Length: 492
Ligand code: HEM
Image (cartoon, rainbow, N blue to C red; front, side, top):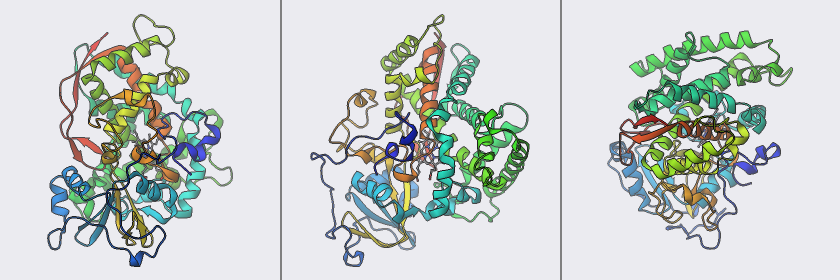
């Protein structure tokens, strides 16, 4: 089984929005791994050697170097080859830089690798019970139950809400206003999720504040770059106390929503909450299970989407010729009513080829989920080296997306690279939504929202960078810009 479109979704889906999978893998021109151990695939791990890697200091290993600059640290690991080991004191890690090995972990041998303890221990109880971190049979059952909520037809029905929210946002801007993209899109993504997931207008009443505070606290708690992530959640740090308070309020809020929604005819509602509540006739999800999943979607879908929107808008602001063509493409769709973007429904959005390529390139250059983690349940051989059970295996997505072996001029933001597929590029050189059975279930939702929002924004305003130059990054749970990304907008 290959990437996302070859999974369950294809049954109902002829053209998956956001499908970024490529055709066949490892064409003959693909360079081999830069380092490869002597052990054959499937051979006895005991006889294989451990991968090479940098030495660390006593007790903490390479952790101090990682904490100082995680990106430079990974760049240095990359110099050791495609399979590299490093330790953070008692924790052993291996980084995989070759797409074939990434595919092995995520796809071919997916059952042999679970989510890593790095995620589980920085995780949060309701996240651990939700789709993102559940394991084994429990995960399989959840995925089967939730899959229909993300079928193409369901997602298409959200297009209008996405376009409408983006229009409201653009209308709220003054001519010449300077916008902080992350803050702006964080609110937008929350409003869209609130409307589609919860069926609530998140600007009304306490709802917005409760959801926003809980999402921010979960994000902060799970931030792998912070010290808090390495402490149990009962330690009364300010982060943990905030987390306990905000998530308790969120639980109470969602429990109340669920209670009120029980008894609603699912056919009458178009939000995920009602669909979740009505799931499985006779085998309905408990209130707690509904809440765990909603929180999971909020956590997995909010920050990722708003970051992609911020990076995409900033990149277009810095590439005015591409932005102008996006504007042209958007205003060409349907009627152009007085210079404003035309009616953008799901079908019109689907036809925005350049906008789609801008989305793909944004997710290549600035992948919000910039590193994925797994852990083998038993000792395995990958790339000819032994990876002992329990090792944290990191898959540095953003490094794969910038590897000159697979990408010409990888630092350049160039949507035209997506016009034609490169038959020699391995499939897993690009994986903004992960891959295999645990690829992002919200992929189509997110891709549609990215396309809809960029289309509305660039259809209606000129965007000029205020923070110029390439963004620099901070390693948190997601790929954060280290400086706010700011632009000036002028009405067209
Ligand atoms: C640009 C936006 C997004 C990006 C880049 C993104 C990325 C990812 C990635 C890379 C994974 C796989 C993680 C892994 O293998 O460890 C994932 C999983 C997941 N995502 Fe997304 N995501 C986005 C938006 C969303 C949205 C909007 C939702 C929900 C509405 C969502 C819900 C989930 C869930 C529930 C999972 C876990 C799936 C499973 O394990 O079965 N994501 N996402």
